[in-house]
Amino acid sequence: MSSQDLESIARSLVEPGKGLLAADESSGTIEKRFKAINVVSTEETRRAYREMLFTTPKLGQYISGVILYDETIRQKTADGTPFTEVLQRQGIVPGIKVDKGAKAMAGCPGEKVTEGLDGLRARFSKWRAVITIGGNIPTDACLEANAHALARYAALCQEIGLVPIVEPEVLMDGTHTIERCEAVTSRTLHIVFDVLIEQKIVLERMLLKPNMVIAAKDCPQQADMRQIAQATVRCLRRHVPAAVPGVVFLSGGQNDVQASENLNAINLLGPHPWEVSYSYGRALQEASQKSWAGDAAKVVDGQKALLRRAQANSSAQMAKYSPAIETAPISLRPSPVPA
Ligand code: 13P
Figure 1 (cartoon, rainbow, N blue to C red):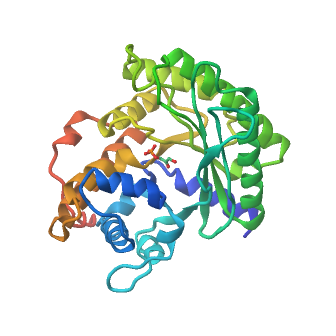
Figure 2: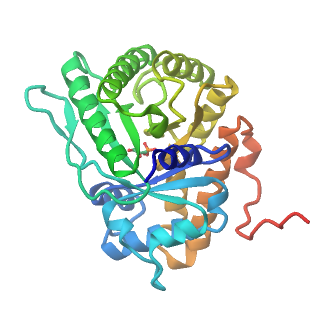
Figure 3: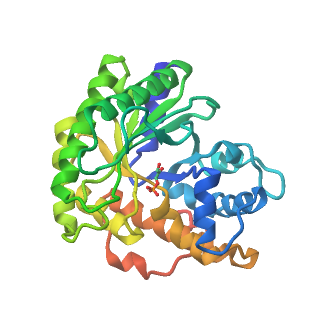
């Protein structure tokens, strides 16, 4: 694949009004999500659930790419169409998660490093590193080890013709303040870009998937969307080179409406040097999972719930989100073609 292709794939993933659906939960994670809706996780229930998501009419108007898990990229609809084909028919680019999850880091108690690199297929891919905030952590040793793994992954992806999504996630778990999250996210991004540049990653041919700068879930002092937007934009502007085509946030445990409101607030502070969009997992899927709850008769409800979140985030990407979107009627019927 030519280098031009990689840059245009990266740019197409952050086309205005579009973002990514992260549907790459490992079998362990999807089992947890299914437990919350009383669905037993089997290869077939996972397939049926993902078929519901990927066959949602009009999804391609709001979703540019879907990140898949290894099992899912090889699955098909009940009538035998490969999921990758179903997505491509809607103009959605398939991608794949290639990391094998965060593992305890030898020599750094309480910290983790992500391992594993194989199964590269699709047009783009994702590798997630997780950074935990605690008393004395993260250490620079942990940040550097994770930045190194991210950079080696990104270099290999570019070498074989995949757009790497580089995801250093500073977790929302704990009681830390928004100020502490900003300091840690700042240090993390500083080290990540230092190593990406050292390892000669072509910045035009990658996307960054960071956390928003936000107080921890159990912090007594929660920041409002304006504070979150200001801190996030300040942090990104200090550390993310303008050559990177797009920043696609993870939702990280924010509720789905908050994730749309915060993205909108961030885009209201634009224009930014990069497109600022979404690559949400939970914030796009949670409502859909609840509406579906494993019942084949509720596929349409599940699809409507997904489409509502996709529309809300698409509007937020263009700084046009309004709370009215949350109650507007949702139709799965194709929009009329303009005369
Ligand atoms: P969440 O949006 O649920 O955080 O998931 C995004 C993701 O891909 C995490 O790796």
